[in-house]
Image 1 (cartoon, rainbow, N blue to C red):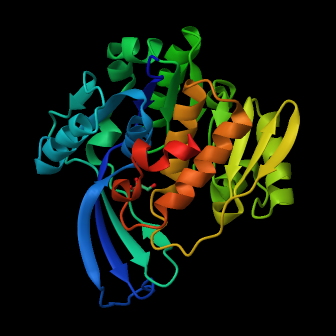
Image 2: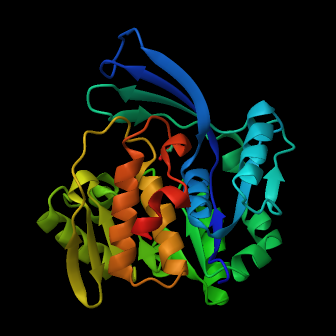
Length: 306
Ligand code: RIB
């Protein structure tokens, strides 16, 4: 069987993760209990998740010429991602970093991203990388690179008949053109609320919020709801997919595990509901371990789910 082909156009960060008994308040200094440096960035995480499940993933990213950039390049190669369209910033920007605080009792986190070279990934880079997009079955983007770059990636994808998945994270206002070019929008409840202008915390609210987003031109909306699963809205109607409840150790990157799995499963030809159920199950697994990519399972560990 040929591997499903995915192109990820998006971000890479180096995660600087501190675990603390609770999240600090303004002006407060707290003792943390542990610290680690890991590979992150929503785009990189989604690409790595899909690659671990067996997708043929090409990444279109930009890094700074520093040790974080070199290590990220090596990590993509070790994970089996195609780095043909890996761009280096030559203007002195640093690679992207993300200081992250994880609360030990709940596994919840707070993240600051400093995009660095991610902010220099340009529409011209996308045009240079057009074959990576055109050769894929689907393209996945997020919002940690400039909006006009994401827009260009989706324009190239649509012109070639390639399916588009947008994870609108971190939350930001989106132009109608981008929503119209999006086949599947995958916000979490906070992002859905921001984009639709209405709450999306319960399944009922998420459905109403998804209807507003479909009304703005998106094909399918999938709102992730943490341990309550996900709400799917297509032209055929709404459906709630539930998830297993677990005691989270670290929720960082769970949304990325969801999107990467969803992309893999859809590119592999699985029906939408089935793909969402698998994405919920693998995202749930990812919260049981610490770290971001370190918590994502390899195919052998989740064969039964696939
Ligand atoms: O979604 C989690 C990711 O968000 C982290 O890896 C961090 O780098 C930020 O991009």
